[in-house]
Length: 326
Image (spheres, rainbow, N blue to C red):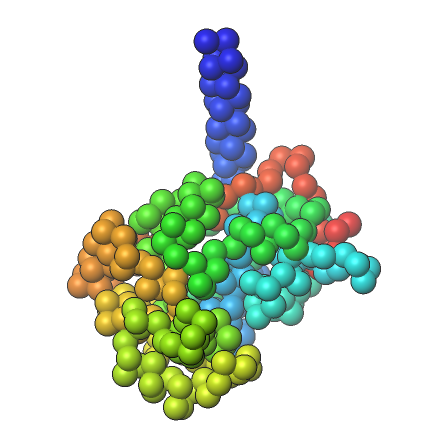
């Protein structure tokens, strides 16, 4: 009983700490210290997004990958300072993440007006939201006040970021570790409605699914043939990119879910959503529902993800340069 009581107290303390950290995030955190912070972020996004709409997909992926490792603390931005330092940026899931230079641009604009005030973690979160809005996607509340982490760990990125080859058990375990549930998994996967993927992230499904030169039977065979003949010509191709939602790579809409039901999602992780009754029910609901409903639900999951493991108060720091710890 004593051990049980101690364990319960520890759980409550941990939960209280997480809730306290989240509570220190608030809308308009910078209103007094840098009143135009959010407007500056939005302006830089709007200056670039119409010439480079693919930036939205890059930023939402960066935000996702950042939050799944040590929380939303900007640790994905940190560069190695020696040849033997293994940072998140160098881990396999992050080798094709884009948008680092853009975050630096936003940081420079903010530093020129309010030096040392706005965190890189908040910049990622705000810029992601603003870029999705700029291409016609949903908006969501972004309470601010995150601080930047000082640690960036290669192994944690490799182990914690949900992989494109993950089955449902792997995915829900990794999401659950971050306090996210099946509905969040389905909703956040909906971000695959924009952007592209390298062939190397799914070519095993086309050429060598079980190691004997076969294709993934859960993928539409006509789509497999099309990809093999027109896009990913060999298992060794690691440079060609393919639209995750063909024909609307820069349009935030419901077509991703319709493709998943047609067995035309590129990744094993897309197909995994149809392998669990609860997830499949959600996929069908969004595929047959209204865009307005999807946007509203997606927004809730994005705000929830943006609160994962945040550092606030005196924890962490405000980096002067996003790529380097102070």
